[in-house]
Image (cartoon, rainbow, N blue to C red; front, side, top):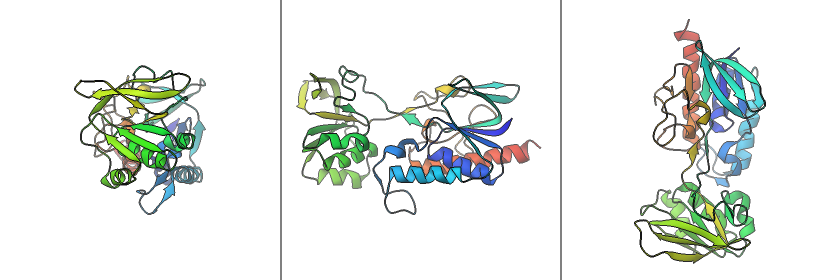
Length: 306
């Protein structure tokens, strides 16, 4: 019987695991992979204390920090379900293993949201991509589109500027959410165009992508844009299915938490990071919220229930 099982392998899981180890909480971290979204990120410039670092290197350093902790156990497996019985919890994995614990911290992050338009599924890997860091080199001297208006979309566009001959950024919103510094880099590049307030209606091509169709978000004439690559970087989907039958989920599909403690609606379950209804989805924030959760779990185990 563990005192705490942490479900996830991203920055939030790692920070919580380090706190739990230092507090001598009997902890198991279960994740199918480590690094989270940072493992595929390019140049990260907002991780406090480091001016610039590749996402891959930062993720690997964080994982090494976790593995260096004494007393913490790590299991590389995908969690399939969390169940509660008699005030305790069972964590089931896809390979059939079951682990028992007194408390749970869900830090399972989020996944790529799809456009769900004709042609998207058909051309995945043949012009439709979700990771510019991974696939930008394939776009050398090609015309590409990035779909999205947040920081991740503009960071993708910045990565693509080193390879593509032309970069279009398309988003449904008229007012873009990305940091001004990222927007300026794209606007001032001389090889990019931003098209806000539109909705993608179709992706088309033959053996590979050759273009997309779009129209004003409120309707109107459908236009075509010739592109050879499309990088989709829109809002992500919280990976909360493993706990959705237990905890409260909001209309956006996120786990609802108390912002002071990171507690969910179920006694004994905490959550942090992109899987929750936190206002801002940022790595630094996920790390802090997960630390907060781990400290509150320590109080719950050692003080409140004595």
